[in-house]
Structures are given as structure tokens and as C-alpha cells.
Image (cartoon, rainbow, N blue to C red; front, top):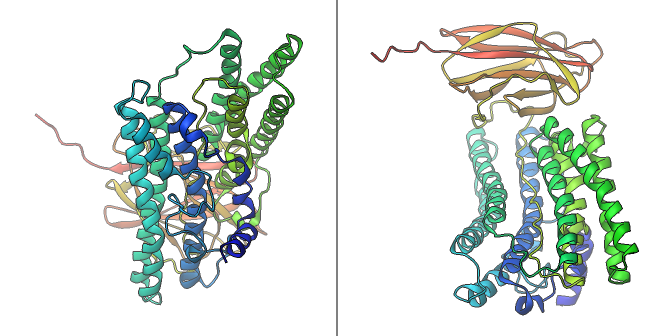
Length: 486
């Protein structure tokens, strides 16, 4: 029975289970260093989050169907098809060694040994395990909410959206813990021979710009992506040249290692190609339209070129270290992230207020388009502000994305006469801006939106226009009278 069910899982999770042959083998539990084991635990946690992220996508689409009567299911499996705890996985459907097994192994082998890990690293791993438990529980919490709530009522739907947002925030925490673990792990190279040190340096030089490039896409930071793409292209050329030098010096360790080198080169080439497509504002899969371009390129296109489940760059680098028996702890993968998509028609569904980091300088270019500022600024009541956005002219099929302080608060949204309400929190320091990005221009160019807001309790309106060459931006200032502290 288990065999038949596993066969079914293999069919359902074709993309996910493609990683199964590349999971870290069980024998590593006793041979891997404590620092390497910490990395293996985090990488398997990242792998498990992919599975849960797809569940949350389905939950979001299910909820949108109640609110909007239109939703596009991206994945076709649910909690009933998965282990009770994806990160524990006692039946080993997804791992040779699960993240929780790695944690238990680390605690028993490394907690007090001479070659153990620091208290700081162990603390990050404990935090990671606790977070994974909470994320896994959220799978069933949302299922229960979808069953018990009366989803014909707007306030009931809004309550479930709040829980989905909490799930998204939990998943976001894994990236923070991953980064903290990476910083806490000491880079130990004392056991490396000179030729091994040279190889590790080669891998590190390629890994860092690839990692930062992908993170730039995650945050939709074009300037960072361009900078890291240039750095990655340079590292890629150096990697190829040094690879040739290794061959000529007779340091090749056999066919397996040679193939791994070729795989790294191939996946890096593909990653740079995807980065150029992202920067070029190329069309992308329409079923991800509501999620936005950076979500699609990060979650769908790029992580498979970086992570283990797609046998990406990091997986190949870690395999190279194992195959060549190099005593270096390895490299950490990047987790998927969850984005909550709101319905289009039931606009009264309450959205969470959008908070952003402080902005010091207004952008001059975004998503490969020139940014123009035709109007100096607008004043809005207080720091808490609700913007109402609608089509200013006849509804002609305009599709827009709206950026507030570097965060895309709406993506690929078809404008309507009925306004959509977006609550935002203006920053008291620095600058605040709203930018209109035209995804198309409808039948009557240019793309025009009306933005209504309150000033001194009265409704005000401002118009933004954007084309396929430029995006209009307006600065928003909070109407706050600063008190004299004297």
C-alpha cells in the first residue's frame, strides 16, 4: 500500500521529488562535520518549505474563489496527500534525512563535543526547528478555518486572509534565520590543502553574486540585480578559466567531479539568462500574473537553478565538496516565499496595512523604465493613509502594477471604475512615493489611474499616467504639524 501511495506522490510531486536522488545520504549523519550538518539541516528545511509554500498558494486561491468567483489553482495536491509533518517525514517520502532528524543528530553529536558547533549556531537551529513546527501547524489551521468559517460573509473571509498573512510572515522568517545561520557559521579552512583552498575560493566567488542576484529579484531591486549580474558574469569567466587551469595541472578528480563542474557552468549560464529576461521585462507565465514578475522569476525560474530540488548551483557545489572529499562545510540554499493574492471583485475584503523601509532617495528607474515626476507631491492626513485607486477614464482593459516605497502593493491588476482600497503607512522620516507601472495600455493609451485620498477630512484626487516607456511617480507627504519640544 505504501509503495502504491508513494508512486502516486511521485506523479503528483514530479517537480519536488525530482530532488529525491540528490538528497543528502543517511550515511552523512555520522561522517559530516557539525557545521556541515547545520547546513544540511537548513537546506532540507528550505526543501520542505517549497512543499508547504505550494499548499499555502492553494489555500489562497481557494479563498479567492469564494471572494471573487475566479481563481486559478496552480497546484493540485493538499494536506491529505502529505505527511502529517512535512519537516519530520518519518516515512521518508521527501528526504533521506529530514530536517528534524538532522537537528536530533546535531544535538546528540555536536552539542558538547570538541569539534561541535557554537552556542549561537545551535540557537539558530533550535529557532529554525521551532519555526518549522509553527509553519507545519499552520497548514491545518488554515484548513480548519476554510471549513468552519462562513465564507459568504466578508468579515469571515477577511479573518482567513489575516491568518494567511501570518503564514506568509512565518515563511519569511525562514529566510531571516537562514541568513543569521550563514553569518553565525565560522568559515573553517584550516584543514584545507592549498589546492582545496583554491577550489573553495572559486566556488565562493561564484556563489556569492549568484545568491545576491536572486535575492535582488526576490525584493524586486533592479539596481541590485544589475550590479550582481555584472559581478556574476565576471566570476563566471574566472571560474571557467580556473577550471581549465585545474584540468591542465592534473587536479581533476575524475569523471564525476568533471561532470559537476560542467553542471555548475550550465546552471550559472541559465541563471544569468533568467536575470536578463527579468531585467528586460520579458513576458512570463500568465497563471502567475497576479503574483507578479519578481515572484515568478524568484520562486519558479531561479531557485530551481540554485537549490537542490532542481540540482542547481548550490546542490552541485555541495556535491563537489563531497565527491572530492574536501573538508569544507558547504553552501546554503534560498527558501521560497509566500505572497498573499487578494480578490479583484470583492473589494471590501480588508487588506493589511502596507509598511515599508525608509526611503532616502526617489527612484529614477524601475522595472527597466524611466521614472517621471510631473507633480511635486500631495499631502495626506496623518501617517495612516487609505488610497482608493480606479480607472480615471472609460474602462478599456488597462492593467497596472502599483509600487509604494519600493514594494509592489498591486501587480497585474485590471483597472475598474469601482475603486480598490489600499491602506498604507507613510514613513515619518525620509520620503514616500507611489508609482504607476503600466502592464499594458488598454485600448485608449496611455494608462491612467485616479487616486483618491483624504486631506483635512476631505476627499482629494490626483491622476497618474504611464506608458510602456515611462512610469509616473508622485511623492506623498504626511500632513503632520511637528510640535515644538521646547
